[in-house]
Image 1: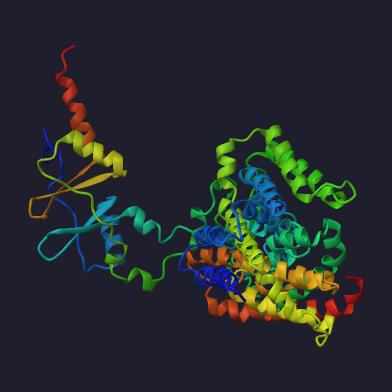
Image 2: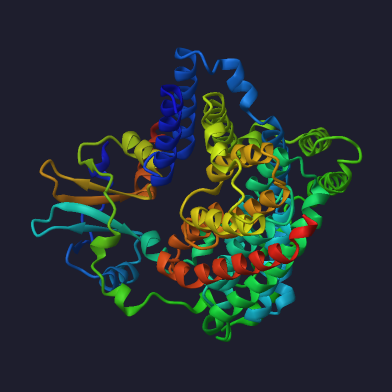
Length: 153
Length: 428
């Protein structure tokens, strides 16, 4: 079995010209953690994750304090939202390079790569770089586990 | 000047220029410069390896290292965070009160501990408190850097230039309290009032959620209370010993290193972790500068500079001190004050050899090196640290802002220091 047997083929993606606001709306509507960004020819050029968007809202001090246990109320930052100007900037500014595999990739290799780079979703591309599917850790992990059924008792 | 002297001056000056341009890390430049100095010294037979080792002031390095080890052990306990949280709660979220309290906590800590470490540990919590309050962190961060620079001038251990001056001049901890503390105290209040005035607009905006800071839990912010207590006991005893070190005929470096040894035996920290936090780059930088200045001395350069002052009675000694305050302050505002201090020490010692009373000049050097750093964003390491931290946030401190808020403080502190210097001249 390889990744093309368990990936979702109906991938949600957005064009590179989309704004941060549009990317957030798609993520909310489709309830997904990773949004691939494609060019006019459907080729994958990068990804933007739920985390990248949430970083815009996360207060700056979170990164500088080792142990936040003693902070019980985030006060003013609880109600701070990114500015309209920020939301209308192109999503490309937050885009990260995507880790991808090709459709022939084995399940264990895909899973090992996700562990190594701490990924939750793995976009799958064709030989010419076109986005053809996406598989989550759960998709890949359950496919691997399903083979245990066939182990003789 | 002979060839050897010219060569050594060339090495020293080009190292300083490289350090000041900040194209290459200052420690790497100083280290390479020191090796070059020894190389030239060996080639021309005027500066051997053993003289280079003798040129290193281990009193200074020992005092700095001992205090660095103590702070390295105190840091993970969360004690600094605890104090900042207490200050925030005591302020009840009122900006001006918070401004004064955080500034005071930072100052008191930096009088006894390295002010770089103090600012490194207090600044992130300051950012936390101001974000929770919903106010700009800039006034607090700038005040912490400036007030800790200023407060550090008050004690022997507060500031690296003071450690250097104390060791070179043979000043005790008490000498600093008698001669420097009163002037620094007045200057500090001047700086605080001026900063309060300059940040009037920011500090008069009411915070949007003052009650949230009251929910910060000081007990939880102190990660390791037992360890913190032990280290504070050792630190307290060390500070008491600093007060009487000259009566006991022990050097401050011994007190600091001894305290570090006791604290390490008592709490037995992970030694790799603790030593990793010691700022070796600073210690190596100091050592390398000492080696370079040693080369200048052996080549006779310092003597020729001192010769310029010989028989020079035209400048009144009081005026000379005031000139040193301002000249060193202006230099320290644009470049690192450590190399300036290290380079000036042998010159002042040389002036002393001509029979002039140099005790007041040491104090002038300390005030200039300490207060000058407030003037620009790059004037002191504490300034650089709060700026670097703010750059990772939504409201970065710009160098223009520092010029508008820090430079007036530098001018005021130097002016107050000069007036008090003249008034108290006879007591030095």
